[in-house]
Amino acid sequence: MTPKQLSSIRVVTGDGARWITDCVNEFTPECERCIDPFHVVEWAMEALDEVRREAWREAHAKAVQAEKANPRGRGRPKADDPEAQSIADAKAKAEQIKKSAFTLGKAQEHLTENQKLKLAMIAENDKRLYRAYSLKEHLRLLLKHKDIAEAEAELKRWLWRSSHSRISAFKELYKKIKRHKNHILNTIRLGMSNARIEATNKKIKLIIRKAYGFRNIQNMLDMVYLVCSNLRVQLPNRKMKLVRSA
Image 1 (tube, rainbow, N blue to C red):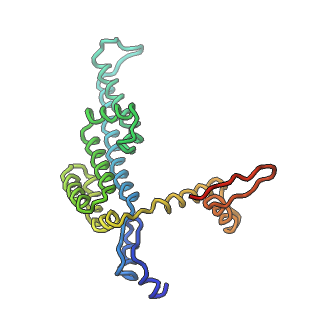
Image 2: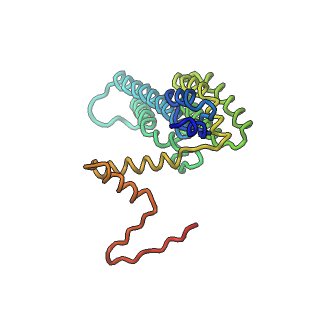
Image 3: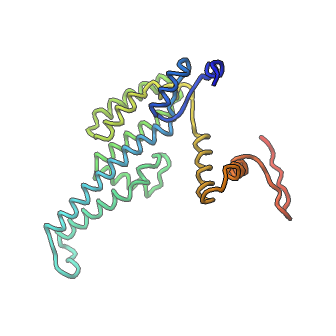
């Protein structure tokens, strides 16, 4: 790019890759660097899933240990057998954590009644995992703030919570968020989002996967233009539907 083109760039938004920041600092030092909210939430999701897997491993180990400590013979145990009930409860807890990935990853306002019940059980039985979920939701919601002062105050509060959470995955996330704090605040202040680009990229990846690859790049480009644009092809023996522009 020419110096004139570089000087015309006002904002660069993307993920938190260091090479992007290095390029911005070197070639467009006057523009503002932003981090897309999708990637920030994705970092929190990865940290949360790490906590979930760790919780499952611990619960599974306890269930196996309980079963080894109380071996039983053939046949069903009695209904009032406390040892059998204890083993069943341990297994149920491990299974509940294992199948909670979708619930924990979902936004709280979109949970179904069954998912709300599952989340309430996690809150009661695994305080650490629920605390991790709460931190993920706190970060997701503060990114939606329109007022930059409120967003900065909430981000400061989140940083304090995560640094004192006693959860190693979120302590690591704390360092990452703190390193990109100004870039995240730029995103909120400017209202930037890569959502449309990310959606288009996902469509293109799906096109390539469905086709099992293309013989040449032009065939792929033709299909991308067909799917991701407003091109309308009239098929034989079918009437063309009129589309009103907004």
